Image 1 (cartoon, rainbow, N blue to C red):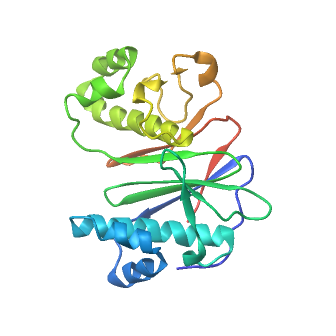
Image 2 (cartoon, rainbow, N blue to C red):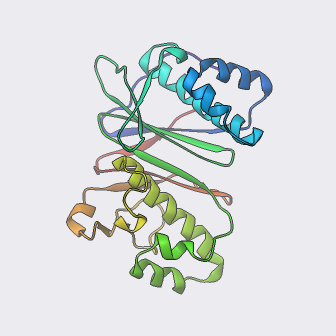
Length: 236
């Protein structure tokens, strides 16, 4: 586990880190030592051990990476929470403002780091789709596009679309205070894109950029920000 300082992203970059939450006992113990008392208390409330270990591995690595940008030790990193629960660093570097967002699904974790602008990231493990979920996630136009897809494409497109929407909502810091249909996309577009509408407005949609994470047969992911002049820099 390297502790060397990290160069911050430029104003046109988002650093993206991805890692596996399945860790050996030695790494788990090191991550546990990095957590705050509140995080350890939260970890101990998980009913299943696998969920507890994923939480510790996710929060521990988050703290380790943030500490390298902040030039602090992991246990010196202090996190606050916005009104909608989005975490932020209460201690900021002297020359730039660190913004970040963390996501995980099953054993996959992803972290986005930006300089001076809010960012959202989401990673989704591809799994069977519950019958009612597309009705909740998609607008009427998106549902029509989804229904027209071949059956073999629906699962992948659904989770790509879900990741885009959640990344956007997380960039706003609202979670699901706003409904997923607040962001509407053209489902025929794969990879990097812009929403078709945001809150029903095409003009607002033009301010957004959504970049796809490298896809795999088992996962989908996206990074989003309300600005257009940025790109992903893959870290690790």
